[in-house]
Length: 122
Image 1 (cartoon, rainbow, N blue to C red):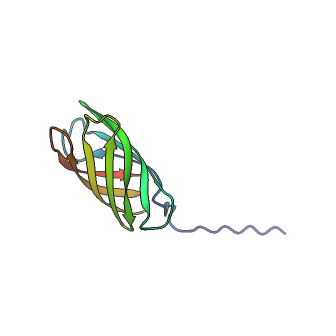
Image 2: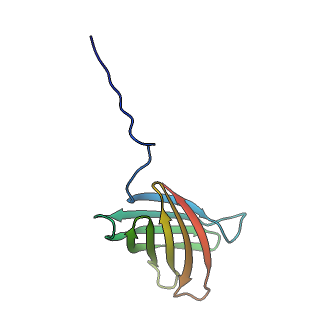
Image 3: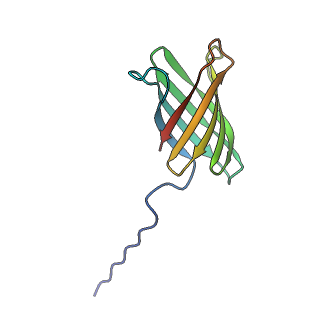
């Protein structure tokens, strides 16, 4: 006789912050929304620094660079610094919920200041 037992845990969601998140800017041009990609690493527990990389692509928009910030579950504070110093820095105030990040942002250190929101999914 062979006994096979299967155990399912949770809903399949990833309970860690680290990973790659993708989404579209919810503001701006609705016909051609900017595509966001964040790859985050968190090397320790809640409250530890967050690092990673990002890319934001859209019509007339090509921005990538590094991510730094802090995570105090569920709150995220992130700064997206561009590789090209002539591009905008993005400051995000966000909430993390398993496989999703909902954020509002404000750009700084650039000619045109922009604000908006984005939802990113793992």
